[in-house]
Length: 369
Image 1 (tube, rainbow, N blue to C red):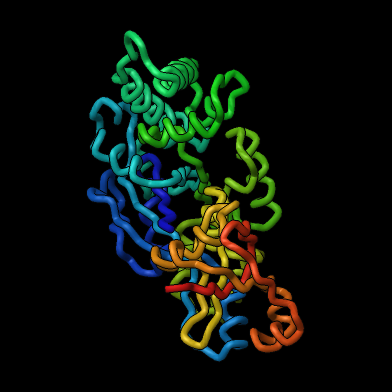
Image 2 (image 1 turned 135 degrees about the vertical axis):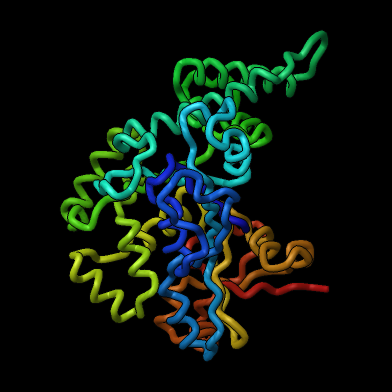
């Protein structure tokens, strides 16, 4: 499954520096002037998963394929983007194509980097969100009201559109509207309508607070995480405190030097690892694992995915022809030492097509012809 995250923010807040670090190479132009990024740069990076190397050792393969996240570096928004200011609606269109939004918000002080409208994280977020809200309002106001005799689905759709409009006009997001107790239809119906209309403020959000190296102690990171989660009205897991410049330096180091650098900074993990893992979980995704002599691999699926649909992620024909699945929990698989020992111990379960996949399932699918 594609997991696509759009990196969004005002000009010169550190978006392209973050993107460069994600790719571990300078693929985006991190220049010190507005609109250095003209076309969106796209990079695919792995989801950190220590389990894969353990499985590879057990089954005797050197081929490891982790789950992936696609990050899109989108040029800086400015006030008035919805009406064409800056590079305007072109950027808003790029955001529509992503599954979630990663707001990059500047908290570092550097007189050598032009602010170009950036003030503080909360104010900057309000500017960007306002542009997204205006864009959603424009989309919804174009929707025609059904006339005459209409079916239930059309009535529900119009009810949802009116609800979205009311919430946006009150200064709220479509995501909040979907979760509102005043919603008069099933939540799943509202989510599907928001998806069909590509509404920007319906997308899940992550918040990267770009700080200076001096603000990177573990205690300060924890304090700022709680502070901004409270200010933004979101879960603390959605807020990632990091120094994008430091992350760019960490990204090109060996694993040993990287660990030493993090230790010197007083951090247990890099901001990038936390960001990627948070992006993966924010969209309510999980992974299942396959482990054979050819490769060890993590496959991305939604939480609550059936075994038949999980098989289809590997190959579309597998969903149609799946007979059953051999399943064992990762921890048990490692404890017993691999497939043969697990099967000999009777620890491998046989599950049918409707089995709900669990995080950490190690799976072999039996496929018919």
